[in-house]
Length: 198
Image 1 (cartoon, rainbow, N blue to C red):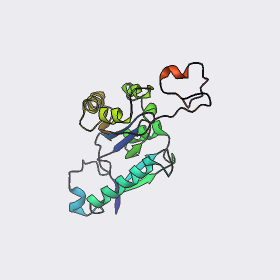
Image 2 (cartoon, rainbow, N blue to C red):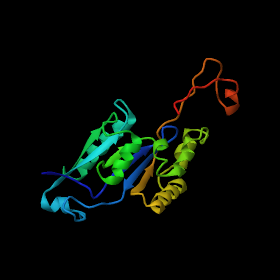
Image 3 (cartoon, rainbow, N blue to C red):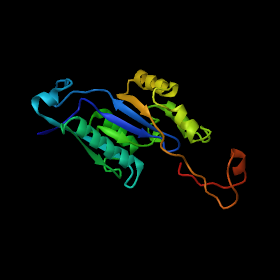
Image 4 (cartoon, rainbow, N blue to C red):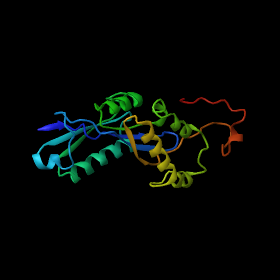
């Protein structure tokens, strides 16, 4: 029997401009009203199914990440925990998926931080352009176990919104295209009309 695991919900959150964030939501009750203990599914033979939402379609690194996560979890739990990936916004946009995650109807999510700032306004800093000098600086700044990651873990814990940060990771950078000149420094865009996605 496949049972919905409501004990652990995860959020894999991506900053489109600069980096993805990986979150874990607070634990909730299982279907029978009890909190599942570690190893319960192994002892009673039950399996659990997790829903993993993302707004993008393949080919995309987020979908690859979700599929890799699903494979690893199934392998490491000997098939007791299965993850179904829902790409292309099938379960809603980023903000909707994050809200569903907090309620336990979605278990995992990978998406952009700009849509999660209603829950954590401190994430708005990642919308700044030229925040990092280069990709190496970006990766170093958000490295696993680094001070920035620790600070955001504290912020999420203090807010008590049902999401727990697990990891920060690089999600790529924005690109600036024009037909006038190379853009290396902020001064280079002076006088150029821009259209952005928001």
